[in-house]
Amino acid sequence: MEGAGYRDNDVLLHWAPVEEAGDSTQILFSKKDSSGGDSCASEEEPTFDPGYEPDWAVISTVRPQPRHSEPTRGAESSCPQGSWAFSVSLGELKSIRRSKPGLSWAYLVLVTQAGGSLPALHFHRGGTRALLRVLSRYLLLASSPQDSRLYLVFPHDSSALSNSFHHLQLFDQDSSNVVSRFLQDPYSTTFSSFSRVTNFFRGALQPQPEGAASDLPPPPDDEPEPGFEVISCVELGPRPTVERGPPVTEEEWARHVGPEGRLQQVPELKNRIFSGGLSPSLRREAWKFLLGYLSWEGTAEEHKAHIRKKTDEYFRMKLQWKSVSPEQERRNSLLHGYRSLIERDVSRTDRTNKFYEGPENPGLGLLNDILLTYCMYHFDLGYVQGMSDLLSPILYVIQNEVDAFWCFCGFMELVQGNFEESQETMKRQLGRLLLLLRVLDPLLCDFLDSQDSGSLCFCFRWLLIWFKREFPFPDVLRLWEVLWTGLPGPNLHLLVACAILDMERDTLMLSGFGSNEILKHINELTMKLSVEDVLTRAEALHRQLTACPELPHNVQEILGLAPPAEPHSPSPTASPLPLSPTRAPPTPPPSTDTAPQPDSSLEILPEEEDEGADS
Image 1 (cartoon, one colour):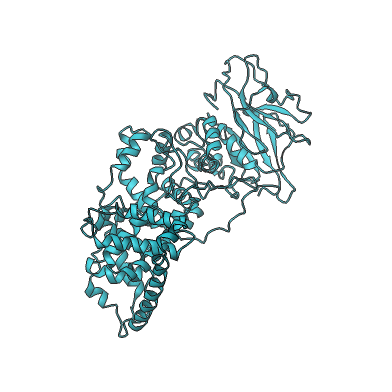
Image 2: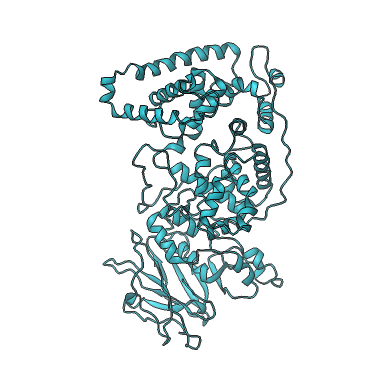
């Protein structure tokens, strides 16, 4: 609601059931007119078409209410949609009761301060929890201690809660903006609008007298609903101090090699690589293990046999494209496109590095051959811009065409989802990053939201090619070998991104940056970051999160502390993910001007399905 005041404006809820013939119900939040009468749903001009038929819709209107107007008492059937239609002032609500589980469809019953019940609101296609979340914008809803399906209603202007509500925002202030963004990207906007449900009641109600509302459980999300991630305000403990160790040397590595060349005490060795990295002279051997080319459990003879086998396999694949004549390639647009794209990218990859500088550098030819052979290895994915950035450091370290190819394949096993046309993996990662950042620093997230930068699209390149262009070349080698250990759990690269944002927090928040300045500042961090400082902070953030006893389950999943919940089938009304029309690298959501789009997604939320049980 634009410009809605909780004291000077009265917010009405209009309800009209779905007719059997089929027009969808509208719930309109509007201000009363100056005569004190209600606005008919049929007289309102809808401000958006969500592209499907929900059981309810929120239509934003601006109708200032004179302070002296008389409020409507009770519910009135003010619109001619039928005997079940009614309007009610939200200020008159005392409680809301939800239906029991196991019914064919869900319903809500609104109870007024006078003690009467309004006609039940039936939801045949889901939507009760989404409606409760929207009501939470205007009211405080808390589960009754005696009945988990009864929500007690409190006004927002309660003195016990005013300060907390001022600092914690449940929904965007401009609901019409949410709607317009929903039309552009339903996944992103669904996330931004409904995942910001924040469990601030506990802290807000703390000053209440004993036995009062301080013992109330959280608002209407006591039972997680498929498709909605609930972000809680978690009280994290102090951030621990972390000290990184020295790099693993050749001598230390040799102490882990057994009589047959089999590595021993591998977990301890991986921990050392995680805490200190590798000395440059050891990388050529160790990276083959970290990237899965060689087995940690294999003997020296087994490794030699494996390399011989993989060498034959590589050159058979390479021969597939090498044997294509120019005439054949003219009739093979896919191969010709890959070759042209690879040649263009290779000519621009790390040319300031001595290993690749100069017009006739043999390293460029190896990059070209390995990437073309990868197109034969992975026909479905082929080549996408950005892959040359991932191969370059590997070839630089390994300095062998065959070994570098198979190490590159191991790396691509970790990140190939980043280059899928659907961009689903990238959206999921940005959503997970946003979830981690909101738990770690909700104030920074609120600031970024306020500057239309809450999507974290400026982190897109970081995640796409694992910070390859953000750090100096030697630091990239150190960063990647630490990440390849898989320690201290999955998705450490997301905490690396959180660490960078944490380091820049004060600069971003205290400088008065807008969205363009935020994007400019983040881009200017390139080559100015210290990898050791970032890794130290990322590990400290991980320890801080894992030490929290009330860490939300979805955060535990990201950190590998809990098994992922079973996926729910998306609703048939959910829109498909957009597909890229070309084989260009995945791109962030489109933006106007130079500012990033204001919303991202969390696990790419499907339409909710709370159907009958709604439990």
